[in-house]
Image (cartoon, rainbow, N blue to C red; front, side, top):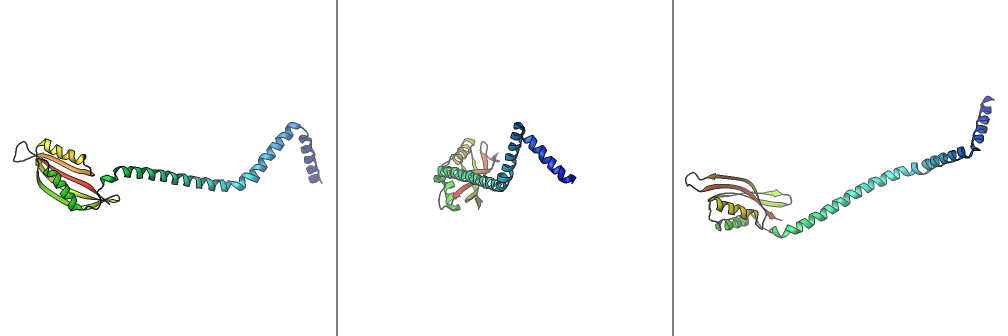
Length: 179
């Protein structure tokens, strides 16, 4: 009988405490928080986590789209500089035509197999020129400021072994052939 007396005693004590307005307010506030947590947050917690994951994935996709748009704008700014439907022979003729316009002597012209540079092919040329410093500099300046894309991979400049005042320049460079 003591068990049922304890239950009754506990209920009476709770009702007596709830008659105090401050304790009643605290009890109601705690019950509202507990019911809100158990009734609303717990069932929706998984949905919230799933929605957050989807939001993060969509933000990444949006950042990728923006980056792609920026790359397209950048590509549009230099697309006219990429020659279409060219091959190694055409590039060699182009470089030979430029070399003829400078007072330098071509001693070696070697074409390597084209290499992949991203989505493009690049012609690889190795040349050796003889001439004065200013003339070799002018040719390098032409490579840098050319309307086509060239990249110098290696350069070696040394004095000529037999002729005084003449330099020998060995160049390895690439030219982007376009698509």
